[in-house]
Length: 245
Image (cartoon, rainbow, N blue to C red; front, side):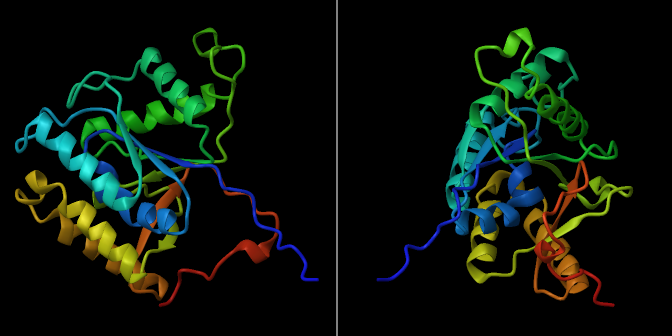
């Protein structure tokens, strides 16, 4: 009689926040494609419709975001805060995002980096998500009592641009070299046609990934920046070092 295989428990979902309809695809789409290919569920929350952009209407950008999320295998919702280019750091916004964290109950949360030298909505949303992840676990917050508290396992930041990469946090590098992952990520970025026509954002992100891959000895990689040091049960959980030169 063959033993019954012991399957690992289902991993909790990843919850990824973006300030604009294309931020997640450009900033961490390769990581998302890799995770969904491995069977993990991912949910996107986008906090504006890109209404202040130079190209594309809000209606067009919502469609692009829906198409891109579908390519990556993620679900998508929009949450309205202050609107594109008007985001402010407010307690009400933090509580709204904390409620979303309690509702989705993710194991990992992704947010734009806190570096200020980028679109101001990015860094401000990063601050809001960081604070929301903390408030989501406090049982006594009156505005959140309808949903049970939830503690996030890890909070990672992504950088939409090179300028947004934190200089004071050592990144983790995620190997996204699998052909299917690369194809889906590229297609998801290209789905944001109104933005891709303006500048060669797709090539920029692919080049960034190629440079990180060369550094790590793989074809392509993307960086995530931990808010807190990751905790390991054993050193055997570590992969190879990214140093190849």
